[in-house]
Image 1 (cartoon, helix red, strand yellow):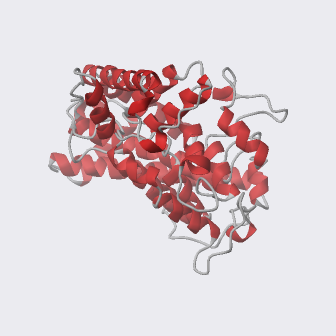
Image 2 (image 1 turned 45 degrees about the vertical axis):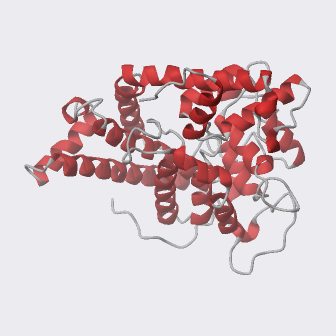
Image 3 (image 1 turned 90 degrees about the vertical axis):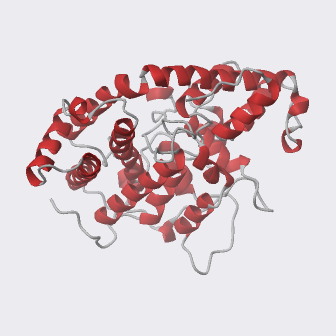
Length: 400
């Protein structure tokens, strides 16, 4: 199947002129529609710039060629734009949601998130998706008339619900939120500007979510091979990878290692994108939606892998998990990184006077105090977290 260069806007796409608007009314831009404006605000935000020095898998000083949160985010945005263009969706909204999906990640990636979640066990918890909402509705301080970025309803909805509904139609938490409940920041904002937590998000948001999976699979293979955590022969045991390598070797016998790996990553992404396009078009045809609202009201997501590619995706992740994410080298770094975050949280709690002036007004109520400290730590880059830790402790680890 050939990827289309683009087509007319689909009837079920999001339309900027039909946006439900912003929480705080603003004059329209003379040069940009509302979704493009959201995209630009995210790019110019402090939180977005910090992604440059936040861990994807490898910490910032592992090497210049490994992905960071920023390079991963840009790669997700490229895939999301490609899918949106081919499917007749709004490219600006898809890009916007891809660019914002990792804003809430703390330093050191998932280990940092686990450590903050542990520290915040009694104070409302911590997870990067709800932290991203907190950033764009309150923590960014750039505009004179409001906190946050004052993004459109469609962007906030997609940021919160890109992985699917959070509740059922009666408001009962479902899925990953069924045990601990929907985070307070989401519920609080939903009371002010309802995000319809029981429904799916726009097709643009779904495209951004599946683009994240595609980028993860392809680029973690690339980084894992570069780091020597496994070989091409090792990963050839995954059927979809073995088939692609056979195809590459048939077309380009004797290809050098670096070009062979690049061709593998390129072909894997292409096949995944083609698969999502075909499956999305099949599901949309069966649903026959006449508006973006019909996509939201569907009983299941539309932008997904086919069953065969979904199985391939599981196979890839099943290979990578023990050999990369649970590699002994990564396990050691993970433990040290978690300790840095936990020790910083504890130190700030006991010695609030060391906080910067703009963070010095520490709330007295314990849950609010914990959230204040967590917000500060979550905004740190890997580098700054280690610098701060070295200010207070003599045992700052070398995360290599």
